[in-house]
Length: 173
Image 1 (tube, rainbow, N blue to C red):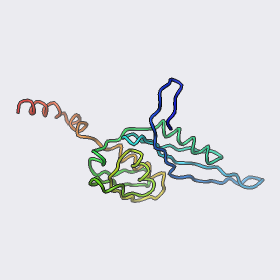
Image 2 (cartoon, rainbow, N blue to C red):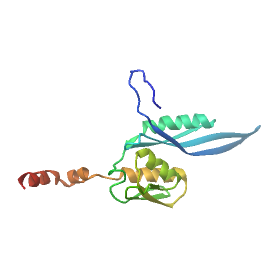
Image 3 (cartoon, rainbow, N blue to C red):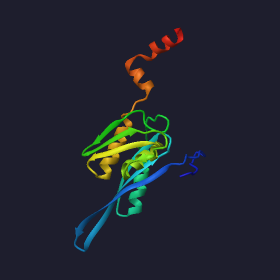
Image 4 (cartoon, rainbow, N blue to C red):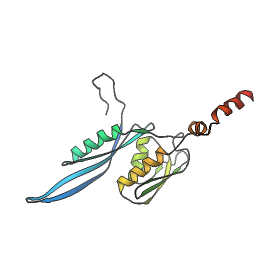
């Protein structure tokens, strides 16, 4: 959505993908009342991605609510060139997703919900396997959990307290 906000700033182009729309029915005196829930993935294609979930009596309203929820919940993910730094497993309730780095040119080898999350995050080469639940909501949440658990080299060095020692060794050597 490339638009102008009230402050005059332009918003960057976001990737918005509808992953799933569910219909539920409530039986009332006059018949059935349907309501809809939508799962949407929002990302900037540059390492930021968010999952949004919305419910409404109309599909378009549910998607609109999910999009605003997804924009609000965007988080950063670690990337290494066009892939991920190492293999990682993510879990959410019954959904389990394994993500593995791939060589350049491999593309995204993934199913629906995993593909949507990974594409929105800007990852171009990755292998995945969805194990456990095939519910798109749990699979998408598991994928996001896997991406959030990734750490880059600087984060690991800082956690271990060896960043400063490495700088000294490099400067002395």
